Image (tube, rainbow, N blue to C red; front, top):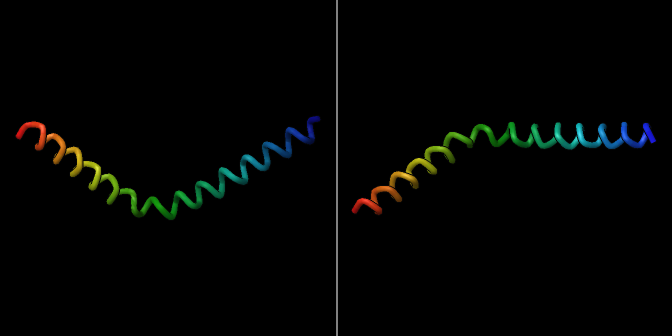
Length: 50
């Protein structure tokens, strides 16, 4: 039973590591998404006040 639990923990860590590596590649794009989101919020606010 303990071995099975250890195996699941290992698989979880491995998938988390792969997910973090994939995320690391996308972190470079993150500021652009943030800027686009801010522009969208500004435009939405502007349209409401118009």
